[in-house]
Image (tube, rainbow, N blue to C red; front, side, top):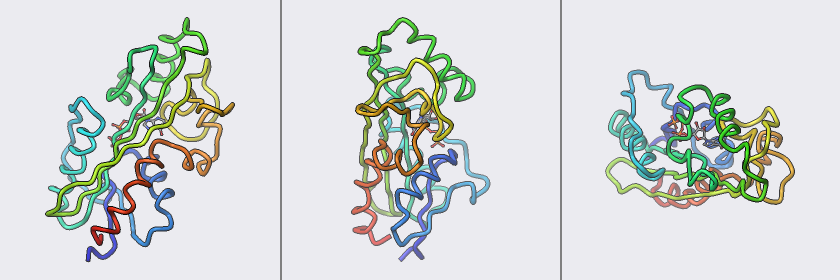
Length: 199
Ligand code: ITT
């Protein structure tokens, strides 16, 4: 119906790679918004991941109009920081991902291992022109390490150690991360909606 093309509404190329890998067996072609120049900037000012994911999906759908759209809003919640950085994850330090990690380590420097619990959350949205959006959620529980470890993944991955793992997400292969991540769980739940909508 839509020539098998689905648009991924993110400017984060790491997310695009992960979503394509999670959906690698689906018979669709996934295209990032980078292929559509002139897209207006999307202001992510909702106070939930779901709200921001819906904003991204609808903004891209309204701009492109003819293809179904997938969007992802995600972030890290740290219990010792009362859930921060949360929806501010990408803007935590106002600088790069590296600066976000250094700032997180600094804020956690006196927090003991047992109290370093945290989780990544992902809200994923799928929307077909003229239909209601489908929303799903995924989380992965873990702890914040005492130093950055690993070169893989992106964002806070060098600090995030899943429960039952000794490695950070950044020390895992992309397949290992993508078997358990918040993004994997949220996007796996969306599969049936994608088929049901006949994208
Ligand atoms: P888009 O809005 O264009 O999708 P973004 O990177 O700004 O790209 P978000 O607003 O969803 O995306 O912010 C997510 C931030 O949360 C991201 O920049 C990372 O800092 C962090 N994050 C989300 N998922 C992550 C993951 O799998 N590993 C490490 N950090 C992650």
